[in-house]
Length: 351
Ligand code: SIN
Image 1 (cartoon, rainbow, N blue to C red):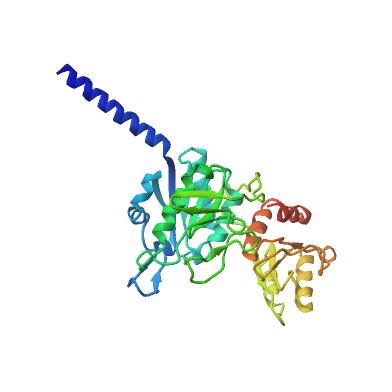
Image 2: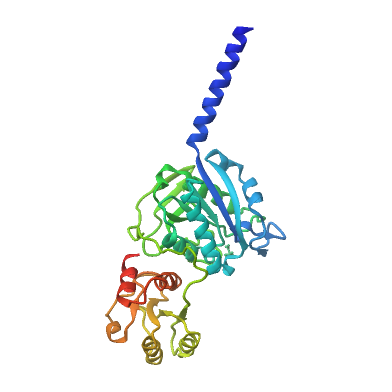
């Protein structure tokens, strides 16, 4: 009898040790759900019509049991919206919650499920406001959860692998979709319907995910250690985007002036260019105290300071290689700290 007890005790001890080892080895991941097509539901598996942001977090988690092999996972619903409805209030809520998770050591990494339409903006906002290098992986889907050959489950599994991979320990905020990993600063949605929609037009993906393995090839240097402090903020300064095109009129600039915008990002032609009428309106807005930031509608390359445009005389700054929607985010955050154009320009060249 004593012998049986000894064997049983040894057996239980081994199981307990094994359990501890596997639990200790597994990363703790919190999945924050915000909606989007990854939580989208359609009437049929073959038609493309669907409503984004319908399926709750628990159902998303239950649909991908494979991910528990890689991590201890908890889920939270932060919002339940299509990302075209993403807003500053939800950005602040999301960023504050992630900062709290890392401050309290509640997790080793965070995955954010998110619509693809504005995912690049949320990713960049988080990369500028989260005070931790721990992985924050944004993920979405181009096909709703109810579609035949939907991409959401695989993307979610991959995102959990990225967040829990030892290789990602200091990676900060990234987007992982379609087996590719992109830096938050550089990723952009490039195609309206393709599952390969995310690209970094200037620099490519920083890593790849395949067969359960996460591999990085390079890391961005444009990820400043000092983050913007958003604690206690309820909103951000108003920054509008004005689009440039042949024979454009100044009405959108005048409207932004009337709305007392603190900044205008001008999505210019080519290297951030404008016609004479728009140039005059931008100059007048700049004299009115509005920060004018020239960016480009081309979708690639940099907007260069003091080239074709005399930025010094006009009082303009440039977005460097940030696209207009990301330039707006940096300008809104910069304006929470300073109105000094030299300091803000410096941020555009370094963040
Ligand atoms: C959205 O951004 O919420 C809709 C589109 C998508 O998720 O792909």
